[in-house]
Each structure stands twice: as structure tokens, then as C-alpha cells.
Length: 176
Image 1 (tube, rainbow, N blue to C red):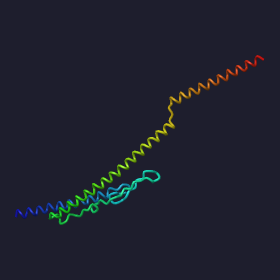
Image 2: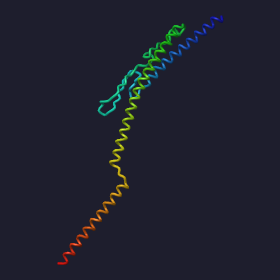
Image 3: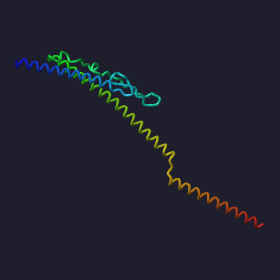
Image 4: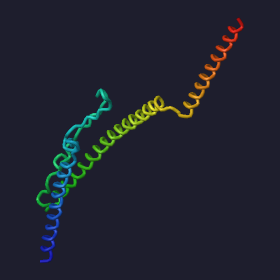
């Protein structure tokens, strides 16, 4: 009895693990379903075009992948994993899926890096243009006050010169 009871218990454990494996596949499918942003889901095969300029002449095309449980190459646990071959098959599927995920993560990472570099470049250009515009429109108040005082002084000197010249002319006319 002890030997057959242990085998039954082992089969029950394998069946429970197979059921957990199938539940994880369902969770993977639901997770992929929930990864869309603004109607685009790169993990369900949708493509995304990122435009870098207003003319749309510079862009980056992101190719979507299908990474639900079927796209990753998973199948449901066969025979409730009664034999080791069924478990080995699942392990092979996990290994292949892991390789696919790592390769795609690397590609998405490179695309992210490109977008971030372009974003930094654009932000720096905006800052430079804003700084230039500020220099054109914002005046240094101390410098402008000094310029205004100099102009007022020149104006006063000009008025005084004209006044003196006018008085000198009238003095000469009085002599006659």
C-alpha cells in the first residue's frame, strides 16, 4: 500500500504543477492583452512608428511581436505531466521562450535608447532656442537704464548748446 500510495501522491503533485503551469499560461495571455497604450500593443503584433520631426522624414519603426502563450511557443501541460517527457517538453518551451524574450528585450532596449537620445537632443535644442529668444526679448535693466541716462544727458547737452548758440546769435544782432 505504501508504494502505490506514494505514486498516487506523486501523480497528484505532478497534476497540481501542470495545473499551475496552465494557469501561468493564462496569466501570460491576460498580461499581454493588458499591455496596450493608446491602442497600440507591441506584444500583440502591432507596429509603432515614432516620428522625430514635423515633416515625418526622420522616424523609427518599431515592429511588434506576438508574445502571448502561443506566440512564445507554449502548449498546455500534456497528460498532467504524468511522465518525465511531458515535463522535459515544457522545460524546452520555457528555455526557448526565455531566449525569445531576452532577444526582444534587447531590441526594445535599443529602440528605447534611440528615442531617448533623440528626446534629449530635441530638449537641448528647445532650451538653446528658448535661451536665444530670451536674449533677444529680455533686456538687462541696468544696462538699459545706463543707456537711457546717456541719451538724456546728450539731449540736455544738445538743448543747452542750441540755447547758447541762439543767445550768441542774438547778441551779435544787437550790436547792429
